[in-house]
Structure formats: C-alpha cells, structure tokens
Length: 479
Ligand code: PLP
Image (cartoon, rainbow, N blue to C red):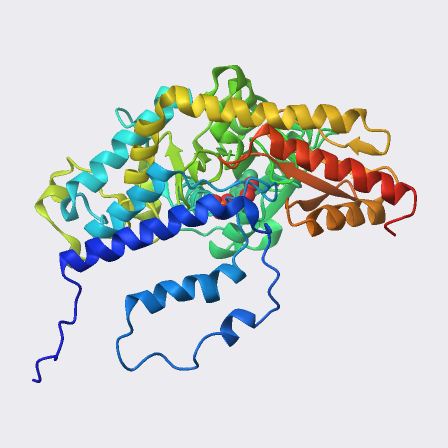
C-alpha cells in the first residue's frame, strides 16, 4: 500500500489550532448577530449553486472551509439566536451547552449500553433526576423506584416512545385494531405522526374538543372514551398538552387523569415547550395533576438554554417502555447487562446508538444553577407579559388567547388579510421575525419571547414596529 505523502489525520496540535479558529468564528458570529437581518433571504437553490457539483478529490486547506462558512452558509442561515427572534419557539444555544456538545463530539463515544461508556448512562440518569427535582416533578419519575428519565432526540420521539409503551401495556404484541387514543384538536402534529409510525390507522386517533381557551375538555374526552368502550374498543392512550404549540393552551391534566383512570388508559403529558417554566415554583400550577401522569416530556432545547437535540422524557413505570422496545441480539450481550444492575438506554428509545447528550444538560445546569435558570424563565416571561399588556390596550389589535407564559397570540381587528399584512410588514424590517398560526378559524400572529439575547429594548422595538404598521394598515397606507 502507498503511504500517503502527507498525514491523513489532524494531529492534536492541528485540532487545537483549528478548534481555536472555530470557537473564534462562533464568538464573532454571536457578537455581530444583532446587525444581521433575522431571516435568510436567499432564493431556493442559491446555496447549492455556490457549491461544486462533485466533492473535492484532494484535501482542501481548512481556512478555505472556514471562509465558505461566511460565503456560502451564513447567507442561507436564518438566525434563531438573534435577539429579534420571536418565531415558532426559541431554541437554546447557551455557551456551556455549545461547549458540552464539543466535548461530546471530542469523546466520540456511543452510549447504547451502560458498558459502552458507563459515564454516558450514569450521568444521564443522574441529571434526569436533577431535572425532575428542578421542575418539581413527582417522585415516581425518578430513577430510585419503578420509573426514570431518559434523554430523547425530540418531543416527537418521546411521544412515540410513550405511545409504544402504552400500547405494550394495553395489548403486548397485538392485535391493535381495537385500540383508541385521544388528543385535542390543538395537540402537536407529532402525535398523528407517531400514530402512523406505530402502524395504527389514523382513525384510531380521536380528537378531544377544546374550550374557549383552546384547552382540552374533560367532558369531551369522557364522552369519546365511553362511546368507544361501549362499542367494544379499548381506550389506551391520552396526550395532555401543557402548552400547545399554537397558543400555549393548558389542558387540565388532573381532570384528564381522572378520565384515564376510569379506563386504565396511559396519560402522557406533552410539555415540550412550556415544561421549562416549571423551574419557577410560582408557575408549577400549569401542570397540576402531573403526579398522576404515566409519562411526561419537555424540551430543554427549546426554552432551557440547551442545544438541539435534548428532550427529557420520564416514565412512571419503565417496565412498559422496556417491554415495548427491548430486543437483545447476541452481539450486544455483556455481563453488566446480564446482571440487571445497570440501565441500557438503547432499550428506552427507537435508535440503538446514542450521543452523550447528558453532558450539555449537566454543563447548563451547573453553569447557570437553579437560580440562573429561574431568572432566565422569569425574565423572558415578564417580557412577554409586558408586550401582551400593550397589545391588549391597542385600539387596532386584539389578543386572542390566554397568555400565561412567554407566548402571545394576537390579530389585527381588520381581519385575516390585515393581520397577515402586518406580520409581513414587521418581518420585512429584518429586525424581528414572527410566525403565525390559526386559532378558531382566524389567522393569528404568535410572538414567542425567549432567546437568551432578547432584552426589553428588543421587545420595545417589536412593539413600535407593530404599532407603526398596524396604524398604516388601518389607514390603508400599506395595503
Ligand atoms: N409538542 C409540542 C407541544 C411542541 O410545541 C413541539 C414543537 O414545537 C413538539 C411537540 C415537537 O417538538 P420536537 O421538535 O422536539 O419534536
């Protein structure tokens, strides 16, 4: 075999040098973020058009790769960490979290089994117990008893696992055709997707009606379940939202738990976004009744300063999850697993392999401390509340849903076309970015406050843009 005429791999020294360059690049990016337009304006195909059609035959200097971050990548990036980011929900990217991800990549381990890296498993179990304590979750979700927590890639993945565990508890390996599950009309699309992935028919998912605040109605769930039971069907799974995606509506978890108990159905709480607010004791009422849920998930990667991907998922009884997801081929057998004394997280998720994601949560919790996390949530929630008060008092705008947390939904009183035009005009400034939803049948603008860079002056700027364009639209100037 020919020896390469130059070393194939970076030495640790080269890694150190280029690593410093990359950290410097990210720091410069963050410093200059506020001066960039929030949303990318490239046309479809623009990014690909900058790239050569075939991969390079020869190794390229790393400096060229870095230069193309500025030339090719940044124009096609929409800046989720921009202080004017009020779209969708925020996504975390604090310094400690970014650096923990670098450590995870540097270690390059694969934590599918306890034995493939004990620290990966044990840190995760421990940090998930910490998180349960930080959020005030019940003892039944902690690792000391029958339950426990695991980090999933996403809330979608957590909901799928909850559904599979519930199905296992209700019907083992099947048949599944008599099973029925329930979620409100406001529930996240990941539930419908989980139904499809699990091979259930879409008609097995029944829709719970919502009240004026867009929260699931207990009487609707009770009626659906009773009707199904009377027809010889098996109600097996209910998803309660603590914070819907459209408007952070809060389903009455305790009341839904009562109905689930009557039918032996599994209650999963999807608190993907709003769950982070539970770090603040005075907001814990939003999840009243969670002590009776079978599973619960929330995303530190949304509101809690942690990089995507990081969803915390807890079950009260891990046996059902393991029953649904454990498959043991010979090549994974090992003495530690056989002893029954360790957790193998491969059995708690869909993929086999897993990254060392607990590191970023550990770095974040230690670097901010519980008090720092509370301060972050309280501050951003107060900013949203101050905006909501101004919107509610505006003669041309209307707040259209309760806003207990960090999201405010509103519309222009002149109707859908004016509301849509208002959002477009404000976004065209490049200083802020808003997205929309439909509530009832109305087009509604959502303002989600929560990136770590967002301060009162950015919310004030958003407010003046809204006020200015709302007036121009009402006067017919911007139409
Ligand atoms: N559930 C709710 C209530 C959400 O708001 C979202 C995303 O916004 C999800 C689930 C899906 O989250 P993920 O991207 O982690 O799958």
